[in-house]
Each structure stands twice: as C-alpha cells, then as structure tokens.
Length: 121
Image (cartoon, rainbow, N blue to C red; front, side, top):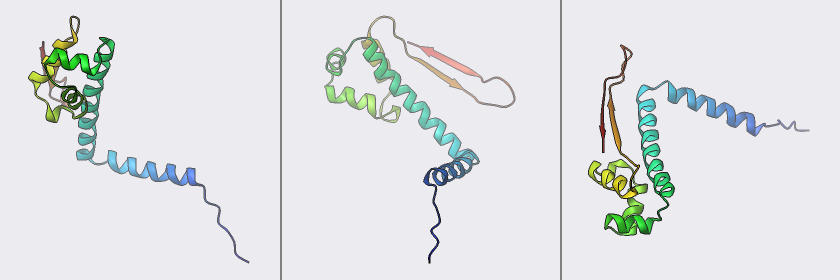
C-alpha cells in the first residue's frame, strides 16, 4: 500500500513566489533594475493613452508626424532606449493643444528631499 502525499499547488506556488520576491527585494541592484523598467513601461503606456485620449489612430499620428505607421508603433513599443527626447517632444506636440512633455531628473537620497530639474515642452 502506498501513501499519496497531497500537493497544494496554490500554496506551493505562493510560497515559491514569496521566496523569489524576498530575494529580489533583498538585492538593491535588482530593485533598481525593476524600478527602471517600471518607469519605462509607465512612459510608453502614457504615450498610447494620450494618443487615445486625443482621439488619434496610429495612422493619424503617423500622418501628423510625417512618419510611417510602423514608426509610430515602434515609438510606442520600444521604450525610451530607442527614442530620442526630441522624438518624444515631437510625438507630444502632434497630440495637439493641451499636452506637454515633462522630464524630471531627481537625485534619490535618504539625506533629504530629491534635487530635481523639470523641463517642459
């Protein structure tokens, strides 16, 4: 007679995730990388959402920018690693009145408030 051990897949998965998360959050380099990637995602999601809010299709945005629709797709998907600040500025200008691009450079420090620089277009 064999004894079958019951396996709780959900509990095992949760424990595995909690272990991975603790390891990730315990490594400052991993946390910094995660935060950088999250900021990239936020930026590109904002571009797409702004285009939708402006009532523009990719084809209409491409026409306003004087580029192909494929280029607009690349701008919205590739992240700022593949896009210049000037290209971002042109994209935001093409959205029309009421949209602006703000870039913030901030020093993170436990010593006090972050030093920042804002540039608006």
